[in-house]
Length: 65
Image: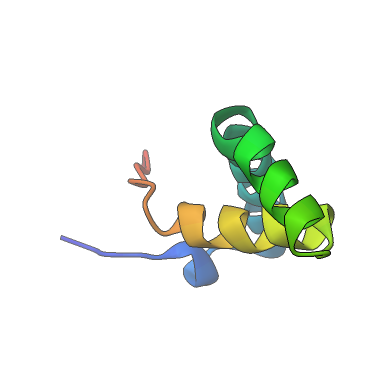
């Protein structure tokens, strides 16, 4: 069995998965992150990107070879 993680993928696949993860995070936690970023004067986009990167490692990757 071969185990791969996000950093083993090519650049194009990483960008596509990162965009998908950003959308997932924004849908699930967008309002909470927006409130937190306003309360603590932080950048919303940076927080979404950081959470999206964390979220990527919770994905299960399936490859058809």
